[in-house]
Length: 588
Image (cartoon, rainbow, N blue to C red; front, side):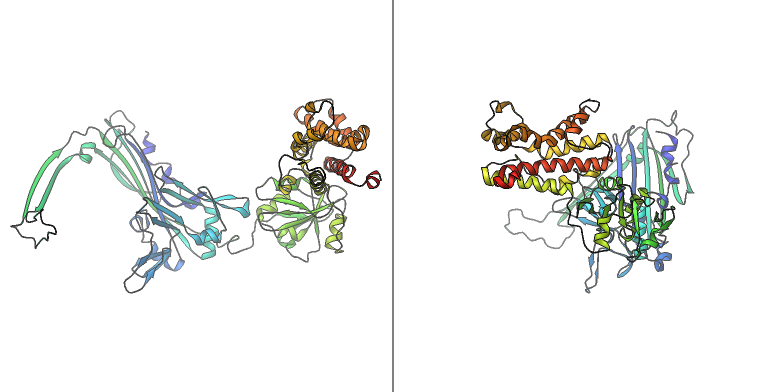
């Protein structure tokens, strides 16, 4: 290893008060090689921490490695007089709590091992949930806030937390965190001559607000030396007695022996660098998550046609009376984050459910822009607002008429989104086959809400994504068709060779004739051909598939996606109506 490595040159310059991750408790010991021979290398880091209120800072300044380091016990204690010290209390003296423990110890002597537990108050205050060895915050896109590291024996070696979240919690509780850390690096070499350590001398120094010590010793001085042992025993116990009782110990009923020797022969040199430091993590008296302080980093939004903007904090008023305009791409951006979903209220309005617990009521206007009441965005978590702000545009195309009908006139439109109608008519067709023909139309069920997150007009942003949307529609309809059951009721001469779409078309043609069945199936066949175009985007057949699906390519891709979903759904509805409605009704 190098001189800088043993001297911990880089490590001692880094302080936790400026680090992204702050260890709350750690014992990470990486050892390689035989312990008593040249070739042994050890890299160890350990730390402990306690949070203190400002009034106890002066006393806490006197506490160091032996007081709050990894060696200090973090457990509850019950005194004989009835006083109980809970596990989160750090006691300066008995019955004198002055600090708060953020990591608890849980010894498990029966099953073996010891667990560390992150303070539940911190977990609940920051609203964290555990996923594997990570603690995540769902309200902020499931960002990892704290993480645990376990050794091969299943015991903890590290619990650390992101400083940003730690400072938020400390500010809310009015605490300061004191960390006492220790680093050690060791290498055993056959001889110090010819190594990077040849010009080093043992020494101690104060540096980087801590204490460093370099030791150089022979291995024989460390592991060798003289030894002595002493053994004493009783001589007055009759082993043949059923219940022997020993009397007082005397010189006459005891005996002893002693031995001593010398152990040596450990060749090599031990080079060891150690560093101790105590430091404070101080908050900035701002707690946006736990205490709900105002976030100074909130964005501004365009509110006027001349590009004029207002700060989010000024829009965070239920009576603000303003709307905001966004590119429709904001929906896809939001849905790409875990925990987000959307639903439809009418043909042009819906709600986006976010991890912050709010549902954003949106509307699509005549310019294909998303319009939202300003307050609904301004009350969101800061990171969500920044996503919306990235898609914010100058007002154009007015506020969605259906959104105004709901929010201003309080007369929601009695229309339905193409997406919802598609899944509705699929359920109706499935029920018709089961009730009328006793046939299971689909070979497996789906979650309509989950599938609707993929089958959406918002998924269509260009031709490639439009073709991909067709693929998703085919996946939830054509690919699920129960070909085996459809063959049982098909009368086609070559039904064993037909695919699922053709089998369903043949079943329909028995009712209304082949030509009319082909006309009804046009958008379904067109979407199926578009799916093939997704795999071969340069195919000249894409244009024919779009025409068969009855898509107007002059429309925006958003509207083309909506048209694809609508036309496919209408075909599914017609299949059910023509097959299962009364003859007069079906004919009309």
